[in-house]
Amino acid sequence: MKISKPLLLVLTPIGVVAGLVEGYRVAGGLVVLMAAMLVLVGVAAATIVLTIRRERRRDDERRPPQELP
Image 1 (cartoon, rainbow, N blue to C red):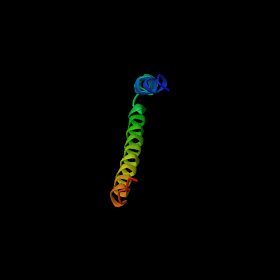
Image 2: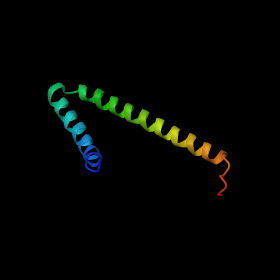
Image 3: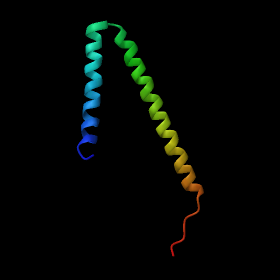
Image 4: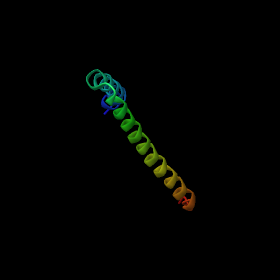
C-alpha cells in the first residue's frame, strides 16, 4: 500500500489527460463531451464527500464528550 497509493494519485490524472488527448486525435470535438462528463462526475464525488464530512462533523458536535475513567 505504501507504493500503490502514490502511484494511483500520480498516474490516474496523467492517464486521463493522455486519454483526452488521444480522444481528440481520434474523434475531435467529441472530447468536449467527455471532458464535461469528467467534470460532472468530479463535482458529484466532491459533493458527496463534503456532505459526509459535514454530517459527521454535526454528529460529533451533538454527541456529548465521553468521560475518562
